Amino acid sequence: MLILGIDTSCDDTAAAVVEDGNKIISNIVSSQDEIHKKYGGIVPELASRRHTELIIPVVNEAMQRAGVDFPDISAISVSYGPGLIGSLLVGVCFSKALSFVRNIPLVAVNHLEGHIFSIFLEAKPEFPFIALVVSGGHTSIYRVNGFGDYSELGRTRDDAAGEAFDKVAKLLGFGYPGGPVIDAIALKGNRKAVNFPKSLLREGLDFSFSGLKTAVMNHIRTSDEIKKEDIAASFQDSVVEILTIKALEAAQANGIKRIILSGGVSANSALRASIKEKAAEAGLEVYLPSVRLCTDNAAMIASAGYHHFINGRMADYTLNPKAYLPL
Ligand code: KG4
Ligand code: ZN
Image (cartoon, rainbow, N blue to C red; front, side, top):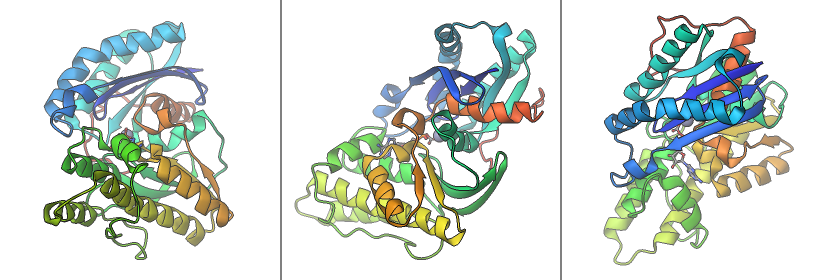
């Protein structure tokens, strides 16, 4: 069974064809990084305008690469939130129109659920598991009991982890997105050079990253001489330790043996190494999607959509995007 996935929740226009929820047939992501780079962050209006230009070519390319035509598609799965409202609107309106014109059932997926489902494109973790979703817009920990059965155990009280990476990169004069740049620069720095705060480290499963960002800003302002690679490495070290400790704590407190990571920040090489090491020490299993499936893509939306579809959970044409949409 083939599902066409569509994601326009943020600044990537993405379409993918996935078979039976776990086999990627095609996966196209058209990045807008070049457009937003000079602003040091995403400009929502520019993102939605670009989605309108890219949505048809990106969907066509996903179909062509898969070597399929619309009669072969069993359902269209679109992410309808959370995200930037103008961006989401493009994907949702396009999907509704395509569903209507081609008479293909429509399925609505929460973008965060998509991130969790990215792991099923490469592995088959048993339920229940702990999911750490760390992206540019979200940082949350969920207990996942089964398909569609999630409970949030903790969330950020202010900035998302990816947002902190992007803001610190901007302070250091690096481009957008900041995560991959900091990841690369940090390799050349000393992660113990600056002792940045680790907010809420031992205080439950909520996160807070805005104090850390402010501490980096103050350090840059008050230091006579700064070494960017040391600041990048020290900042990253704080984020990695917080994320690792909380993910492990969630698993141990819930008596769960498996942790999955997802979202753009889970592409971070230091985080991947840290969580693998600490989980092994604690006797826990860790599932990491490959880097291309950590960041936004539509294969994960098709994967989640497949499970909605086979369980009869279809959307109708009253579907509207939602900027705020808890899982
Ligand atoms: O999941 P994603 O593509 O989009 C959202 O749903 O937000 O995540 C994008 C975020 C950005 O903040 C980006 O800086 C961060 O993921 N990111 C990384 C890395 N690659 C992407 N953060 C740290 N290290 C990386 N290697
Ligand atoms: Zn995302």
